[in-house]
Image (cartoon, rainbow, N blue to C red; front, top):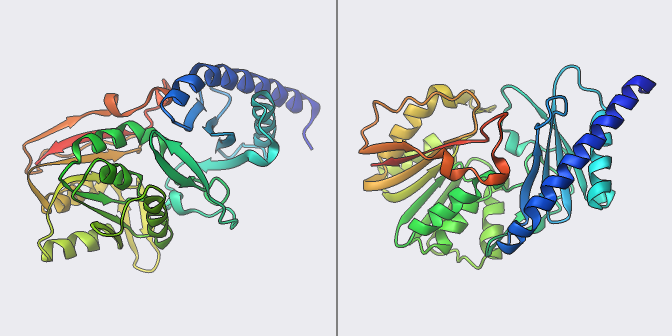
Length: 321
């Protein structure tokens, strides 16, 4: 049970958060509605003592607390209730999550429930299944919607490779942009099934759109053996991951030069690689790569609803082979 002093403090914070979220929602909703964008961010730790992120999913709210040792279980439900009330969202459409800092093992696949319930969200003229019920992450990383559009605009006639593809939104954009082929690779069977569902939803055929369940480094080795070549790639790995049964771990700070070298071996001359990370302390080490050019394009890839003084949601580089 909360003591009255703490309860009053939380009550005050919940009103501050709700008011801030409402203001942002009013500012963004019409603009995104015109673009047919149904998923966008309303708040991300903008007030120092309110350690939360709030995302809008077409009448659903996903509210995450950045938890720490001194987090109190009553806090997040109070924030959720206040935001839901001010935006007139029914309680059953409010999804509360906890995000822990530090090395998180494949957070995108961490299950918190087993409803297997997916709902459809629109992003421009595409549609994607999201599941706000069962996982920490919902199935769509909205902070990369600008990057997806960039891929679509240059995909025509190209062989496209999507590594760590998750639910395949980049592959759907590439296919819609006229890519000759797409290849989507992820270690998770759940993710690969989800990619196919997203492709079906967008009328993208099975032919020429290959789905591969594999660890990235295994795929790179096999693809090299088979002389597979690509003109365009997206490489967006988790910051850390471990494979329990193989005792192999991946750390983006340590391993990105090796990863990118492996990708380069599959790229045709003049090909483009979009490499991205959400690691908050990432230091690029790309000097030794045999490439024509590398340019950081983060300022172009972060949408307006993700611009934050507190943190950079992701960083992105465009590499010319």
